[in-house]
Image (cartoon, rainbow, N blue to C red; front, side, top):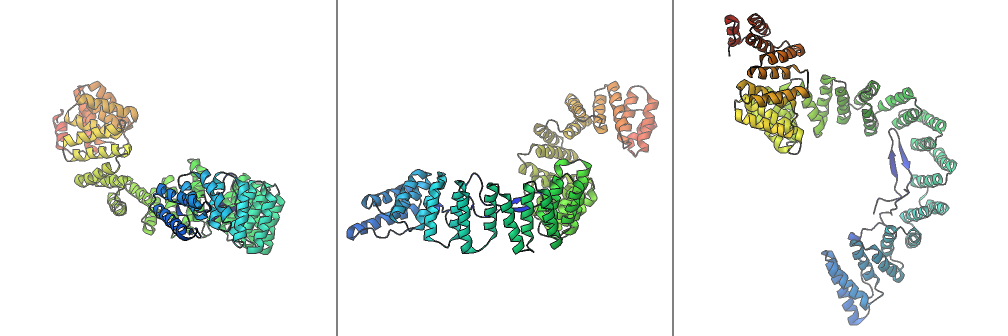
Length: 591
């Protein structure tokens, strides 16, 4: 059975929580009392089953059926109950148990027949009627449901659930006035309530009687002038029926009563946004966000609603300002601080974002995504010690997070502690076995680590695995190719990989330098000169290595003066190697 139809259902808009009345247009469900699960059926005692030996036999058969049902042996249980019915066709408890067995087997038509017999025999047993209501619901026989709820009301006249269920059935049969009459009777028992108010509104709106629906809310306001929720309901009623000015007026009245109610400002923001008055809408949002109420999740949803409009600068600015206000209003809420951190990241304010992520983690260390963002920033800013400390702290709570293992491993690699890096990155490959991107990056990092340990075989194997997971991983292509060229091994393979990296990410100085150096190793000095000049043109760091490589190329092209000039430039840019000094002093290439 689905959730109770008469319970209040809350509709969450971007800026308002309003009660939507109880009856959907396609489904029906009954109260908890009515909605009995056939898997947990009520055990009904057999009652009068005859006299003498017949009575004893019937009881034995009935309780045998119950025992078999308890161990879920439904076939055997059904056979025992059927034997009871054969001996006593008017045995209502056995009919009820057979019906429950049929329900468990999703045979509702047969269950319905058994229950219809049971209620004819014992019309005062509410469990029979409740089970029968379930069958009628499944068959969408709403007219028959009316009688069921009439009987349940007769049996338990003070149970409000049955009145709501009765009104539900009336609603589905479009007997709106009958449903309203049921609510009138219920109000005599329970007195006025928000549930009755909401249900009546739903019917009035279905009938197109907006004024009657509004009048009901106005009466509620008159009786409870300080209850802001009724103003919110009334404004939503007007707004949803395009009576915008009335909706605004109601909310402005509410604001005079309680200016510090965030929902009022959120509702006004919604209305102004619908009217295309973005400035007024945003102003109301800022007022709402500055009120420390219980609507923080709703406010976060509003901020996230700006994301699809990124990178529009106005959307970014609005989301960032609202998240700033949120963080200031809820300084002890980890979610608020994390959202502001996210917006700061969107604006590339990484140091500020890191500060708020740290505060968020300090308040709540159980949100993994925030910790990953923090470590990514630290790693990107070359704050390796912080990345390791925060990353290992995160892994103490989330040891099976593959990406965090990779990030911590990458941090140890930056510190040139290759063995520690390998331990973490291997974990990442085992934990992230179905993430091709992670696997490619992890094996690429392992290739770099093994190269640092001078284990060329393991390094090459790792790079090959990286490319098997992503043949377009430009960093693997470049690094693998460069290390092969340094060893003067598999130069054709190296050239192919390096050229592919440059095709994928052109105008990258380090990639162009790699390709030039491979061509140099292949003795294609003219080609090497062309690509090294591209690398120097795209180089923003005055790389000593590139200048030295260019000098080497110029030497083999016969221009010794240009070679020495570039070797000296490499020395000025920080290269103090003995090999470079020998090249300069002897004016010739040396390895």
